[in-house]
Length: 354
Image (cartoon, rainbow, N blue to C red; front, side, top):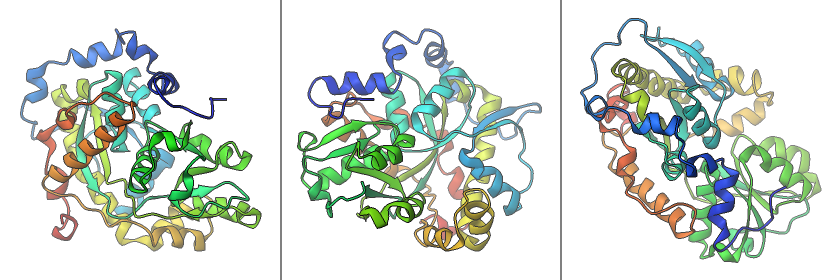
């Protein structure tokens, strides 16, 4: 089990080891090398207007979200073959899948591309959906008397450096005026958070909105509760390895996929009753009441024609991580492939562009 506290000079070493970047430090001679060696002229070339016949992509679809969306949204056929829908969502897992060549494009929050850069792996953001309302809240262990973020001082907090939950926690701490050394960060991946809460290994863990109903149903009677904040994880994005985007056929397929991705999110937002039944109830085993409580908190999709706000937020996030010694400071502009800017916005009605 990881040490319950990470502070000082050992923070970067410990978290780097946790997230599997030892290979990156050693050079990543095979996988990262191939990414870094991508032909720059190909990577900068204009996108093809048609996807070449025979092109395929391996696309992430955590808990089969994309398949359920596409099945019910009536978006038509993709103009390329999906060789596999990969049930993967966590940023560290996505990065490892990119490295192994088992994944071509993924849907994540803003922090995994920063983590990939820190590991020396070259991947680019190709589409942005802006999130205006919080997707995460803070859950307490059973029997806790913690009521505010200010009460986190001296407490053990579940922390995942490479995932959205991590940046939400760091931003909440900063807003509350708490320094990293005021708390005890417990390095875990998000799939370990519930177990850590239940066992009392941590006092607080950030949970996605859709996770909290089931947790409270089981532990609220034992003194567990949730703490809400106005801290948002601004970016819901698509990204892909630079080596994939340097392949003109695959880059064209990624560009063709973006409108389907954007339209599917609009459909989900506009059809909450269908989504509750077909996804939350049928595939996540939630009650209809629980599903409805989650969709009431859903963000309206926003695909801005400009990435300026996204880049500013991503830079703030990278700087926040650098302040804590989790990554080295860098210019996040290198993470965005502007050939794809505006594709998502053009594919949705005007009300979803602002």
